[in-house]
Length: 350
Image 1 (cartoon, one colour):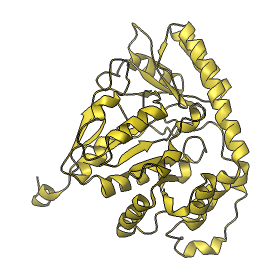
Image 2: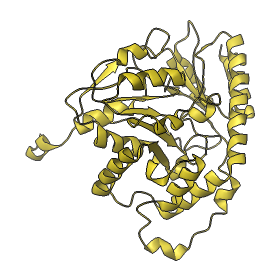
Image 3: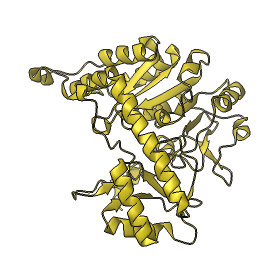
């Protein structure tokens, strides 16, 4: 090893889902929305000459639009380049205690990557045998708490009361709820309104799933104005110009078309319910899903074999070679036509 390498920060990186370059496949491995963005997005106009200038560092137009959408004030909204950027900023801002940050052992696999990269102490708390988060396990001293709701990759949802109990037991640390998939859960599942009551609660959202804008990288957080100020202080100390001008305008257009947003979410939920019934009747075990994907296994068959065979047939799922979940496949919900082809493949394979 060369001398300079001794001082390199070495981390085990996050592994994103495969982005195949081949065409005519059924891509159900990265939880993207099968329907395009709102037509209003394509009509958003910006002055091409304006691209020579830096974008608005405060992302004012989108921050104001999101504040209006959530019936709150703009000082309670933080916008970043995808929810990954938002969460990374939150890690840098709030997780600086000598006590460990707590998150489930089966959850979004970027959390330990950020913690390791930033030198943050953390502890993974085991979910139970049915992949449920046990709230009582978080009733102890910690340097912060984070988990997705619905959880990933299990797709399981916890209730508002569950989160309220965790908040009441952790008044001295920041609690981050990652709501990347909440729009596909039953109405009233979001805890974004609780940020008005609990000053240590940060709720994170993304445009990548329900709003079909994964390619534009738009995420945001809602929380107490003091939390948001602290995050902006870190952002302006790290990279002031995080979001480009087209993304800001496309994001605003997406939020303005609430009817289209709700229509496509309903399509995905309806398809999810139909698909789950079909594959359960074939013998699959499927965890209760409140997301735009399902987590399923077929007893007696190795998930990796199904994964490999599906890929040969032009169908891409997500497989995690990880303790406790290597029997499962994560399957994004596509269109009805795509899911019918998946069912045909399962019938043929099995």
